[in-house]
Length: 450
Ligand code: ACO
Image (cartoon, rainbow, N blue to C red):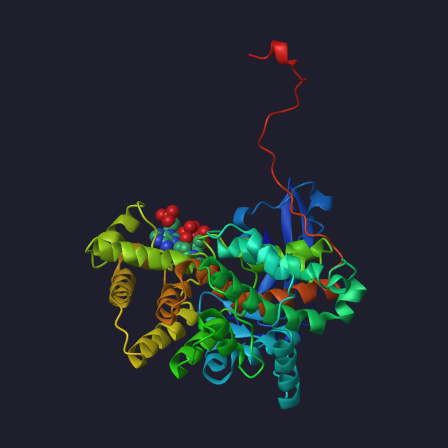
Protein backbone atom coordinates (compact mmCIF):
# COMPACT_ATOMS: atom_id res chain seq x y z
CA UNK A 1 0.00 0.00 0.00
CA UNK A 2 1.34 3.44 -0.75
CA UNK A 3 0.24 7.01 -0.31
CA UNK A 4 1.43 10.19 -1.99
CA UNK A 5 0.71 12.31 1.05
CA UNK A 6 2.53 12.38 4.35
CA UNK A 7 0.31 11.33 7.24
CA UNK A 8 3.15 11.38 9.73
CA UNK A 9 3.43 15.15 9.76
CA UNK A 10 2.42 16.99 12.89
CA UNK A 11 -1.20 17.53 13.74
CA UNK A 12 -1.88 21.24 13.78
CA UNK A 13 -0.47 21.74 10.29
CA UNK A 14 -3.87 22.07 8.67
CA UNK A 15 -2.61 24.82 6.35
CA UNK A 16 -0.71 22.27 4.31
CA UNK A 17 -4.01 20.90 3.12
CA UNK A 18 -4.83 24.08 1.26
CA UNK A 19 -1.30 24.33 -0.12
CA UNK A 20 -1.55 20.88 -1.78
CA UNK A 21 -2.53 21.47 -5.40
CA UNK A 22 -3.44 17.84 -6.13
CA UNK A 23 -5.78 16.04 -3.80
CA UNK A 24 -3.74 13.24 -2.14
CA UNK A 25 -4.40 9.64 -3.13
CA UNK A 26 -3.41 6.22 -1.84
CA UNK A 27 -3.11 2.99 -3.74
CA UNK A 28 -3.70 -0.50 -2.42
CA UNK A 29 -2.59 -3.59 -4.31
CA UNK A 30 -5.01 -6.50 -4.00
CA UNK A 31 -4.38 -9.79 -5.80
CA UNK A 32 -1.76 -8.06 -7.93
CA UNK A 33 -4.07 -5.25 -9.05
CA UNK A 34 -3.56 -1.71 -7.92
CA UNK A 35 -6.53 0.33 -6.80
CA UNK A 36 -6.42 4.04 -6.09
CA UNK A 37 -8.34 5.68 -3.29
CA UNK A 38 -8.80 9.31 -2.28
CA UNK A 39 -7.16 10.48 0.93
CA UNK A 40 -9.26 12.61 3.22
CA UNK A 41 -7.32 15.26 5.17
CA UNK A 42 -8.82 16.69 8.34
CA UNK A 43 -8.51 20.32 9.36
CA UNK A 44 -5.65 19.42 11.74
CA UNK A 45 -3.73 17.55 9.06
CA UNK A 46 -4.81 14.03 10.01
CA UNK A 47 -5.11 11.60 7.09
CA UNK A 48 -7.50 8.81 6.19
CA UNK A 49 -7.75 6.57 3.15
CA UNK A 50 -11.29 6.71 1.88
CA UNK A 51 -12.05 3.01 1.44
CA UNK A 52 -15.79 3.35 0.90
CA UNK A 53 -15.50 1.84 -2.58
CA UNK A 54 -12.92 -0.79 -1.53
CA UNK A 55 -15.33 -3.71 -1.27
CA UNK A 56 -17.21 -3.02 -4.48
CA UNK A 57 -13.90 -2.73 -6.35
CA UNK A 58 -11.96 -5.62 -4.80
CA UNK A 59 -14.45 -7.92 -3.07
CA UNK A 60 -12.41 -7.50 0.11
CA UNK A 61 -13.36 -5.69 3.28
CA UNK A 62 -10.98 -4.04 5.74
CA UNK A 63 -10.75 -5.77 9.12
CA UNK A 64 -10.33 -3.64 12.24
CA UNK A 65 -11.78 -5.26 15.34
CA UNK A 66 -12.39 -2.63 18.00
CA UNK A 67 -12.22 0.12 15.32
CA UNK A 68 -8.84 1.33 16.59
CA UNK A 69 -7.90 2.30 13.06
CA UNK A 70 -11.23 3.17 11.53
CA UNK A 71 -12.64 6.63 10.95
CA UNK A 72 -16.39 6.16 11.25
CA UNK A 73 -17.30 9.73 10.34
CA UNK A 74 -16.13 13.25 9.66
CA UNK A 75 -16.99 15.51 12.56
CA UNK A 76 -16.51 19.19 13.41
CA UNK A 77 -17.02 18.88 17.15
CA UNK A 78 -13.92 17.63 18.97
CA UNK A 79 -10.28 17.12 18.06
CA UNK A 80 -7.95 14.78 19.95
CA UNK A 81 -4.27 14.18 19.33
CA UNK A 82 -3.69 11.24 21.62
CA UNK A 83 0.07 11.15 21.04
CA UNK A 84 0.45 14.70 22.29
CA UNK A 85 -2.33 14.75 24.88
CA UNK A 86 -4.32 17.43 23.02
CA UNK A 87 -8.08 17.87 23.38
CA UNK A 88 -10.03 20.71 21.78
CA UNK A 89 -13.73 21.38 21.45
CA UNK A 90 -14.64 23.34 18.32
CA UNK A 91 -11.00 24.47 18.25
CA UNK A 92 -10.79 25.64 21.87
CA UNK A 93 -8.20 23.84 24.03
CA UNK A 94 -9.67 22.00 27.01
CA UNK A 95 -7.19 23.77 29.31
CA UNK A 96 -8.64 27.18 28.37
CA UNK A 97 -12.22 26.00 28.66
CA UNK A 98 -11.49 24.43 32.06
CA UNK A 99 -9.95 27.65 33.31
CA UNK A 100 -12.29 30.24 31.79
CA UNK A 101 -15.59 28.65 30.80
CA UNK A 102 -18.46 26.90 32.57
CA UNK A 103 -20.27 23.66 31.86
CA UNK A 104 -23.29 25.56 30.46
CA UNK A 105 -21.19 27.68 28.14
CA UNK A 106 -19.10 24.71 26.97
CA UNK A 107 -22.29 22.71 26.40
CA UNK A 108 -23.56 25.49 24.15
CA UNK A 109 -20.22 25.62 22.31
CA UNK A 110 -20.20 21.87 21.71
CA UNK A 111 -23.79 21.76 20.49
CA UNK A 112 -23.87 24.91 18.35
CA UNK A 113 -20.23 25.27 17.30
CA UNK A 114 -19.49 28.77 18.65
CA UNK A 115 -19.12 30.35 22.06
CA UNK A 116 -22.43 32.04 22.88
CA UNK A 117 -22.96 35.77 23.12
CA UNK A 118 -24.26 37.05 26.42
CA UNK A 119 -27.86 36.96 25.15
CA UNK A 120 -27.48 33.50 23.66
CA UNK A 121 -26.10 32.09 26.89
CA UNK A 122 -28.82 33.76 28.96
CA UNK A 123 -31.49 32.31 26.72
CA UNK A 124 -29.87 28.85 26.77
CA UNK A 125 -29.68 28.90 30.57
CA UNK A 126 -33.27 30.11 30.73
CA UNK A 127 -34.48 27.18 28.60
CA UNK A 128 -32.51 24.73 30.74
CA UNK A 129 -33.98 26.28 33.90
CA UNK A 130 -37.55 26.14 32.58
CA UNK A 131 -37.25 22.48 31.65
CA UNK A 132 -35.99 21.09 34.93
CA UNK A 133 -39.32 19.64 36.07
CA UNK A 134 -40.41 16.13 35.19
CA UNK A 135 -43.97 15.38 34.19
CA UNK A 136 -45.69 14.43 37.43
CA UNK A 137 -46.72 11.04 35.98
CA UNK A 138 -43.05 10.12 35.65
CA UNK A 139 -42.91 9.65 39.42
CA UNK A 140 -44.88 6.42 38.84
CA UNK A 141 -42.17 5.16 36.54
CA UNK A 142 -39.57 5.66 39.26
CA UNK A 143 -41.74 3.75 41.70
CA UNK A 144 -41.90 0.85 39.26
CA UNK A 145 -38.19 0.08 39.67
CA UNK A 146 -36.97 -2.13 42.51
CA UNK A 147 -35.23 0.08 45.12
CA UNK A 148 -31.77 -1.33 44.43
CA UNK A 149 -31.96 -0.91 40.64
CA UNK A 150 -28.77 0.45 39.16
CA UNK A 151 -29.18 4.18 38.46
CA UNK A 152 -27.74 3.75 34.94
CA UNK A 153 -30.55 1.32 34.08
CA UNK A 154 -33.07 3.78 35.47
CA UNK A 155 -31.47 6.69 33.62
CA UNK A 156 -31.56 4.98 30.26
CA UNK A 157 -35.18 3.93 30.68
CA UNK A 158 -36.25 7.35 31.94
CA UNK A 159 -34.58 9.24 29.09
CA UNK A 160 -36.59 7.18 26.65
CA UNK A 161 -39.66 7.77 28.81
CA UNK A 162 -39.12 11.56 28.62
CA UNK A 163 -39.36 11.21 24.84
CA UNK A 164 -42.77 9.57 25.26
CA UNK A 165 -43.99 12.75 26.98
CA UNK A 166 -42.81 14.81 24.00
CA UNK A 167 -44.06 12.85 20.98
CA UNK A 168 -43.57 15.80 18.63
CA UNK A 169 -39.82 15.47 19.33
CA UNK A 170 -39.62 11.68 19.31
CA UNK A 171 -41.65 10.41 16.36
CA UNK A 172 -38.52 9.63 14.34
CA UNK A 173 -39.47 12.39 11.95
CA UNK A 174 -36.20 14.17 11.19
CA UNK A 175 -37.71 17.39 9.90
CA UNK A 176 -39.98 17.75 12.90
CA UNK A 177 -37.16 16.86 15.33
CA UNK A 178 -34.67 19.29 13.81
CA UNK A 179 -37.25 22.07 13.90
CA UNK A 180 -37.56 21.48 17.65
CA UNK A 181 -33.93 20.66 18.24
CA UNK A 182 -33.14 23.52 20.61
CA UNK A 183 -36.12 22.61 22.79
CA UNK A 184 -35.17 18.92 22.86
CA UNK A 185 -31.51 19.68 23.60
CA UNK A 186 -32.13 22.00 26.56
CA UNK A 187 -34.87 19.73 27.81
CA UNK A 188 -32.50 16.75 27.91
CA UNK A 189 -29.60 18.69 29.46
CA UNK A 190 -31.98 19.84 32.17
CA UNK A 191 -34.00 16.69 32.79
CA UNK A 192 -31.06 14.28 32.85
CA UNK A 193 -30.03 16.03 36.06
CA UNK A 194 -33.53 15.84 37.58
CA UNK A 195 -33.82 12.15 36.69
CA UNK A 196 -30.43 11.44 38.27
CA UNK A 197 -31.29 13.23 41.52
CA UNK A 198 -34.77 11.69 41.70
CA UNK A 199 -33.33 8.20 41.18
CA UNK A 200 -31.00 8.76 44.11
CA UNK A 201 -33.77 10.11 46.37
CA UNK A 202 -36.07 7.19 45.56
CA UNK A 203 -33.31 4.65 46.16
CA UNK A 204 -32.83 6.12 49.63
CA UNK A 205 -36.56 6.15 50.43
CA UNK A 206 -36.45 9.95 50.47
CA UNK A 207 -39.06 12.30 48.99
CA UNK A 208 -38.17 13.71 45.57
CA UNK A 209 -37.07 17.34 45.70
CA UNK A 210 -38.42 19.73 43.08
CA UNK A 211 -35.98 21.90 41.13
CA UNK A 212 -35.71 25.62 41.89
CA UNK A 213 -35.66 28.37 39.27
CA UNK A 214 -33.28 30.60 41.20
CA UNK A 215 -30.38 28.14 41.26
CA UNK A 216 -27.62 27.56 38.74
CA UNK A 217 -27.27 24.22 36.99
CA UNK A 218 -24.90 22.52 39.42
CA UNK A 219 -26.51 24.06 42.52
CA UNK A 220 -29.92 22.94 41.39
CA UNK A 221 -28.67 19.38 40.94
CA UNK A 222 -27.11 19.33 44.43
CA UNK A 223 -30.28 20.87 45.85
CA UNK A 224 -32.38 18.06 44.30
CA UNK A 225 -29.91 15.47 45.63
CA UNK A 226 -29.32 16.71 49.15
CA UNK A 227 -31.95 19.25 50.29
CA UNK A 228 -34.55 18.15 52.77
CA UNK A 229 -37.91 19.84 53.25
CA UNK A 230 -36.66 21.10 56.63
CA UNK A 231 -33.07 21.89 55.59
CA UNK A 232 -32.01 23.30 52.22
CA UNK A 233 -28.59 22.21 50.96
CA UNK A 234 -26.13 25.10 50.67
CA UNK A 235 -23.50 24.43 47.99
CA UNK A 236 -19.96 25.28 49.16
CA UNK A 237 -18.09 27.32 46.53
CA UNK A 238 -15.39 24.65 46.18
CA UNK A 239 -17.98 21.95 45.55
CA UNK A 240 -19.75 24.11 42.97
CA UNK A 241 -16.51 24.73 41.13
CA UNK A 242 -15.33 21.13 41.27
CA UNK A 243 -18.63 19.70 40.03
CA UNK A 244 -18.95 22.27 37.25
CA UNK A 245 -15.41 21.40 36.18
CA UNK A 246 -16.19 17.67 36.34
CA UNK A 247 -19.15 18.13 34.00
CA UNK A 248 -17.21 20.42 31.66
CA UNK A 249 -14.33 17.94 31.38
CA UNK A 250 -16.74 15.17 30.44
CA UNK A 251 -18.78 17.21 27.94
CA UNK A 252 -17.50 15.49 24.81
CA UNK A 253 -14.72 13.18 23.76
CA UNK A 254 -14.85 12.40 20.07
CA UNK A 255 -15.86 8.91 18.86
CA UNK A 256 -15.74 7.01 22.15
CA UNK A 257 -17.88 3.92 22.80
CA UNK A 258 -21.03 5.75 23.95
CA UNK A 259 -20.86 8.58 21.41
CA UNK A 260 -20.33 6.10 18.58
CA UNK A 261 -23.36 4.24 19.93
CA UNK A 262 -25.42 7.43 19.85
CA UNK A 263 -24.36 8.04 16.24
CA UNK A 264 -25.03 4.42 15.29
CA UNK A 265 -28.55 4.51 16.74
CA UNK A 266 -29.19 7.95 15.20
CA UNK A 267 -28.02 6.70 11.80
CA UNK A 268 -30.99 4.34 11.71
CA UNK A 269 -33.24 7.38 12.04
CA UNK A 270 -33.96 7.12 15.77
CA UNK A 271 -34.87 10.25 17.68
CA UNK A 272 -32.61 12.10 20.10
CA UNK A 273 -34.17 10.59 23.25
CA UNK A 274 -33.74 7.01 22.06
CA UNK A 275 -30.21 7.73 20.84
CA UNK A 276 -28.96 9.20 24.13
CA UNK A 277 -30.72 6.44 26.09
CA UNK A 278 -28.59 3.97 24.11
CA UNK A 279 -25.54 6.13 24.85
CA UNK A 280 -26.20 5.71 28.57
CA UNK A 281 -26.18 1.91 28.22
CA UNK A 282 -22.88 2.01 26.31
CA UNK A 283 -21.36 4.31 28.92
CA UNK A 284 -22.27 2.00 31.79
CA UNK A 285 -19.51 -0.59 31.27
CA UNK A 286 -16.38 -0.56 33.47
CA UNK A 287 -14.05 -0.15 30.49
CA UNK A 288 -15.82 3.10 29.63
CA UNK A 289 -17.80 5.39 31.97
CA UNK A 290 -18.07 2.75 34.66
CA UNK A 291 -14.34 3.16 35.30
CA UNK A 292 -14.81 6.09 37.70
CA UNK A 293 -16.72 3.83 40.12
CA UNK A 294 -14.28 0.97 39.50
CA UNK A 295 -11.37 3.26 40.51
CA UNK A 296 -12.90 3.97 43.92
CA UNK A 297 -13.64 0.29 44.49
CA UNK A 298 -10.04 -0.50 43.55
CA UNK A 299 -8.63 2.20 45.88
CA UNK A 300 -10.89 1.04 48.72
CA UNK A 301 -9.79 -2.55 48.30
CA UNK A 302 -6.10 -1.53 48.25
CA UNK A 303 -6.74 0.47 51.42
CA UNK A 304 -8.55 -2.42 53.11
CA UNK A 305 -5.64 -4.74 52.29
CA UNK A 306 -3.20 -2.34 53.94
CA UNK A 307 -1.33 -2.03 50.63
CA UNK A 308 0.10 1.31 49.51
CA UNK A 309 -0.49 0.32 45.90
CA UNK A 310 2.80 -1.52 45.30
CA UNK A 311 1.24 -4.98 45.52
CA UNK A 312 -1.58 -3.94 43.25
CA UNK A 313 0.84 -2.63 40.63
CA UNK A 314 2.64 -5.97 40.72
CA UNK A 315 -0.69 -7.81 40.20
CA UNK A 316 -1.59 -5.48 37.32
CA UNK A 317 1.72 -6.21 35.61
CA UNK A 318 1.14 -9.94 36.00
CA UNK A 319 -2.29 -9.59 34.40
CA UNK A 320 -4.08 -10.49 37.68
CA UNK A 321 -5.61 -7.02 38.03
CA UNK A 322 -6.25 -3.95 35.90
CA UNK A 323 -5.25 -0.53 37.09
CA UNK A 324 -8.61 1.19 36.67
CA UNK A 325 -8.46 4.84 35.57
CA UNK A 326 -5.27 4.09 33.66
CA UNK A 327 -4.80 3.64 29.95
CA UNK A 328 -6.78 4.93 27.03
CA UNK A 329 -7.48 3.80 23.50
CA UNK A 330 -6.58 7.19 22.07
CA UNK A 331 -4.27 8.91 24.58
CA UNK A 332 -0.76 7.54 24.49
CA UNK A 333 0.30 10.45 26.62
CA UNK A 334 -1.30 12.14 29.63
CA UNK A 335 -5.07 12.56 29.29
CA UNK A 336 -5.19 16.38 29.64
CA UNK A 337 -8.43 16.07 31.61
CA UNK A 338 -6.73 13.88 34.20
CA UNK A 339 -4.03 16.50 34.72
CA UNK A 340 -6.59 19.28 35.20
CA UNK A 341 -8.81 17.21 37.45
CA UNK A 342 -5.98 15.72 39.54
CA UNK A 343 -4.97 19.25 40.55
CA UNK A 344 -8.58 20.31 41.12
CA UNK A 345 -9.23 17.26 43.31
CA UNK A 346 -6.32 18.13 45.56
CA UNK A 347 -7.38 21.81 45.75
CA UNK A 348 -10.97 20.94 46.59
CA UNK A 349 -10.18 18.35 49.23
CA UNK A 350 -7.76 20.77 50.87
CA UNK A 351 -10.21 23.69 50.80
CA UNK A 352 -12.95 21.52 52.30
CA UNK A 353 -10.53 20.28 54.94
CA UNK A 354 -11.19 16.67 53.90
CA UNK A 355 -8.46 14.14 54.19
CA UNK A 356 -8.97 11.06 52.14
CA UNK A 357 -6.42 8.25 52.46
CA UNK A 358 -7.56 7.10 49.02
CA UNK A 359 -6.04 10.25 47.50
CA UNK A 360 -2.63 9.29 48.91
CA UNK A 361 -3.00 5.79 47.50
CA UNK A 362 -4.00 7.24 44.12
CA UNK A 363 -0.99 9.57 44.11
CA UNK A 364 1.29 6.68 45.04
CA UNK A 365 -0.18 4.42 42.34
CA UNK A 366 0.26 7.16 39.76
CA UNK A 367 3.84 7.87 40.79
CA UNK A 368 4.76 4.18 40.82
CA UNK A 369 3.06 3.43 37.51
CA UNK A 370 4.61 6.39 35.70
CA UNK A 371 8.06 5.08 36.64
CA UNK A 372 7.33 1.44 35.93
CA UNK A 373 8.60 -0.10 32.70
CA UNK A 374 5.35 -2.06 32.12
CA UNK A 375 3.22 1.10 32.12
CA UNK A 376 5.82 3.27 30.38
CA UNK A 377 6.29 0.76 27.56
CA UNK A 378 2.55 0.51 26.96
CA UNK A 379 2.08 4.26 27.28
CA UNK A 380 -0.45 3.88 30.08
CA UNK A 381 -1.23 7.16 31.84
CA UNK A 382 -4.03 8.22 34.17
CA UNK A 383 -7.27 8.96 32.35
CA UNK A 384 -10.05 11.36 33.38
CA UNK A 385 -11.61 8.75 35.66
CA UNK A 386 -8.56 8.29 37.84
CA UNK A 387 -9.24 11.31 40.07
CA UNK A 388 -12.86 12.12 39.31
CA UNK A 389 -14.25 9.48 41.69
CA UNK A 390 -12.37 11.02 44.61
CA UNK A 391 -14.02 14.37 43.96
CA UNK A 392 -17.49 12.87 43.59
CA UNK A 393 -16.97 10.89 46.78
CA UNK A 394 -15.97 14.05 48.68
CA UNK A 395 -19.11 15.80 47.44
CA UNK A 396 -21.19 12.96 48.86
CA UNK A 397 -22.27 11.35 45.59
CA UNK A 398 -22.67 7.59 46.15
CA UNK A 399 -20.37 5.36 44.10
CA UNK A 400 -23.19 3.75 42.10
CA UNK A 401 -24.12 7.24 40.85
CA UNK A 402 -20.66 8.08 39.52
CA UNK A 403 -21.34 6.92 35.98
CA UNK A 404 -24.64 8.79 36.03
CA UNK A 405 -22.62 11.93 36.77
CA UNK A 406 -20.50 11.14 33.73
CA UNK A 407 -23.69 10.81 31.66
CA UNK A 408 -24.94 14.23 32.82
CA UNK A 409 -21.63 15.71 31.70
CA UNK A 410 -21.56 13.84 28.38
CA UNK A 411 -25.10 14.85 27.36
CA UNK A 412 -23.97 17.90 25.28
CA UNK A 413 -21.52 15.71 23.33
CA UNK A 414 -24.15 13.08 22.58
CA UNK A 415 -26.62 15.77 21.52
CA UNK A 416 -24.09 17.47 19.24
CA UNK A 417 -23.18 14.15 17.62
CA UNK A 418 -26.84 13.24 17.11
CA UNK A 419 -27.33 16.64 15.45
CA UNK A 420 -24.44 16.02 13.03
CA UNK A 421 -26.01 12.74 11.96
CA UNK A 422 -29.53 14.17 11.79
CA UNK A 423 -28.41 17.10 9.67
CA UNK A 424 -26.14 15.35 7.24
CA UNK A 425 -25.93 11.58 7.25
CA UNK A 426 -28.32 9.66 5.09
CA UNK A 427 -26.53 6.31 5.41
CA UNK A 428 -27.29 3.81 8.13
CA UNK A 429 -24.16 2.67 10.01
CA UNK A 430 -23.70 -0.96 9.25
CA UNK A 431 -20.26 -2.57 9.58
CA UNK A 432 -19.34 -5.87 7.94
CA UNK A 433 -17.82 -8.95 9.55
CA UNK A 434 -15.62 -11.91 8.75
CA UNK A 435 -17.74 -14.98 9.33
CA UNK A 436 -15.83 -17.75 11.15
CA UNK A 437 -18.72 -20.13 11.92
CA UNK A 438 -19.79 -23.43 10.37
CA UNK A 439 -20.12 -23.82 6.63
CA UNK A 440 -23.49 -24.57 5.05
CA UNK A 441 -25.01 -27.85 6.30
CA UNK A 442 -28.39 -29.57 6.20
CA UNK A 443 -30.94 -29.39 8.97
CA UNK A 444 -30.90 -32.50 11.22
CA UNK A 445 -34.27 -33.70 12.64
CA UNK A 446 -34.26 -33.89 16.44
CA UNK A 447 -34.43 -37.73 16.52
CA UNK A 448 -31.24 -37.94 14.50
CA UNK A 449 -29.18 -35.56 16.66
CA UNK A 450 -26.95 -36.94 19.28
N1 ACO B 1 -3.86 -1.76 33.69
C1 ACO B 1 -2.93 -2.70 33.34
N2 ACO B 1 -2.62 -2.99 32.06
C2 ACO B 1 -3.29 -2.33 31.11
C3 ACO B 1 -4.25 -1.35 31.40
C4 ACO B 1 -4.52 -1.07 32.75
N3 ACO B 1 -5.43 -0.15 33.08
N4 ACO B 1 -4.75 -0.84 30.25
C5 ACO B 1 -4.12 -1.50 29.27
N5 ACO B 1 -3.23 -2.38 29.77
C6 ACO B 1 -2.31 -3.23 29.01
C7 ACO B 1 -3.06 -4.37 28.33
O1 ACO B 1 -3.13 -5.50 29.16
C8 ACO B 1 -2.21 -4.58 27.10
O2 ACO B 1 -1.05 -5.26 27.50
P1 ACO B 1 -0.37 -6.35 26.49
O3 ACO B 1 0.08 -5.56 25.31
O4 ACO B 1 0.73 -6.97 27.28
O5 ACO B 1 -1.48 -7.32 26.13
C9 ACO B 1 -1.76 -3.16 26.72
O6 ACO B 1 -1.77 -2.43 27.96
C10 ACO B 1 -2.67 -2.49 25.70
O7 ACO B 1 -3.99 -2.47 26.24
P2 ACO B 1 -5.32 -2.64 25.42
O8 ACO B 1 -6.31 -3.37 26.27
O9 ACO B 1 -5.04 -3.17 24.07
O10 ACO B 1 -5.77 -1.14 25.27
P3 ACO B 1 -7.17 -0.68 24.72
O11 ACO B 1 -6.92 0.53 23.92
O12 ACO B 1 -7.91 -1.78 24.07
O13 ACO B 1 -7.98 -0.36 26.05
C11 ACO B 1 -8.78 0.76 27.94
C12 ACO B 1 -8.10 0.92 26.57
C13 ACO B 1 -10.08 -0.03 27.80
C14 ACO B 1 -9.15 2.16 28.43
C15 ACO B 1 -7.79 0.06 28.89
O14 ACO B 1 -6.62 0.82 29.01
C16 ACO B 1 -8.42 -0.21 30.26
O15 ACO B 1 -9.06 -1.21 30.46
N6 ACO B 1 -8.22 0.73 31.25
C17 ACO B 1 -8.83 0.59 32.55
C18 ACO B 1 -10.31 0.99 32.47
C19 ACO B 1 -10.48 2.50 32.35
O16 ACO B 1 -9.85 3.26 33.07
N7 ACO B 1 -11.39 2.90 31.45
C20 ACO B 1 -11.72 4.30 31.25
C21 ACO B 1 -11.27 4.76 29.88
S1 ACO B 1 -11.50 6.48 29.71
C22 ACO B 1 -13.15 6.63 29.51
O17 ACO B 1 -13.86 5.88 28.96
C23 ACO B 1 -13.68 7.82 30.13
